[in-house]
Length: 256
Length: 242
Image (tube, rainbow over all chains, first blue to last red; front, side, top):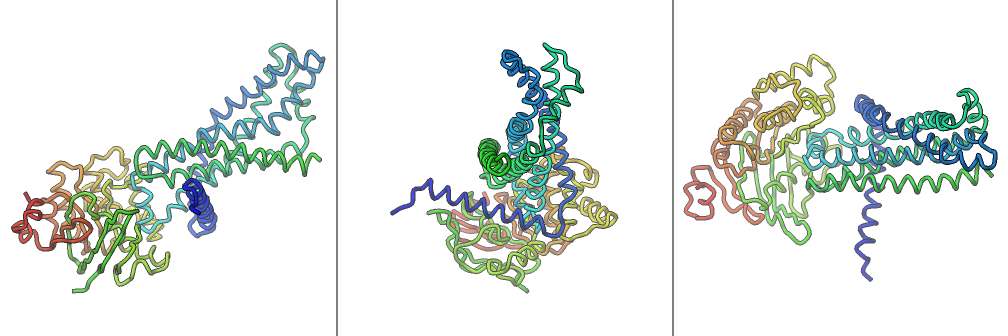
């Protein structure tokens, strides 16, 4: 029986991804780690994403507070707003929304950058010169994403709590000290830690998918757009899937 | 004279399309060989096989005494440091300055870390190609001719024994094209390299070639000096030189 074409290509791509992952891991430990490029990528991926991440975080906390306040007021439970917002943001909404924002901003830019380097034969030039493009381009970008996305998420979480404070004070009167005391009183280490681990996985997925799609793009100019687009779509799907798995694991081992 | 490149019975297909049918080529040390041919006849595939970017389906390919498709990955990497490849587009790293482009192979391939030595080598090679003032520019600030010179400088800086040129004058005006052709010849004399030059540009072939091969339909169909081929009676061969 003939294997369907889509299945063959799916299996081929899965094999290529495993091979790409193995090359990434091997090259982390090879001599000549590209520290300068790694720091440059941390700057590009991390520092240059602070604006969008902070804005998103603030609006997240602000809107979540405004949306939940009227309902909680009906039950006379408006005092629970800070704890509800902090648990929602830290455990779930912060990591996932910031992960998706980073997928849109970072995975697309890595996919497009490596895709255009591929089209203009810059990656071939590195390989032919005897240099190691995986070590220079891939290892640095994936590790920078894995490091920066959790840090960006922590920043967004902190700003989201601030947004929640402003949201509460639009119609009420709560001091910042009281708001933060209530927020942190509701949080325990098991709220924070699994979510933090999740963001590391999200960061890795964003870097890996962006690099894979860009590095393996075709040679035409159209493929640069395709690489950027598929990088965002695939990274977003990975974030949602990883989140679903992480929530199941956390529920089973942490909250039970 | 010692043969640097030997190719016997090279074949390569992409899907059902047979690009290389039977390529046989010998290049002696210090020789400049030009490959002429229409687009899609397998010129670029041939030189990409020589650096191991494309694996042929059949045939033997010996470069600098090593069978390129039988050696280990590490040996291939080492061999590539002795071969320069000038891409049609130049393939300059556009996120880096000219200096960083030149330092890239020096620090990664030759493992030179001394700042003074790096500066001396960069300045020396840029001087050779007439780009001394461009050292701190980025590739987007360079003209087409300057980009070609810069790409040649980056190829030459590691002092390769062989240089493979993939259409070095494509996209340039006639005057710049001649300048680049003369530069290729000057650099070949200065650095004592062996070259294979793929081109459609007849003046470039005339300036640079010791020997010209014409490829058609995946095979070499004619070989000779510029004068021999340009005076050929074969109408197809003659058509290249009109």
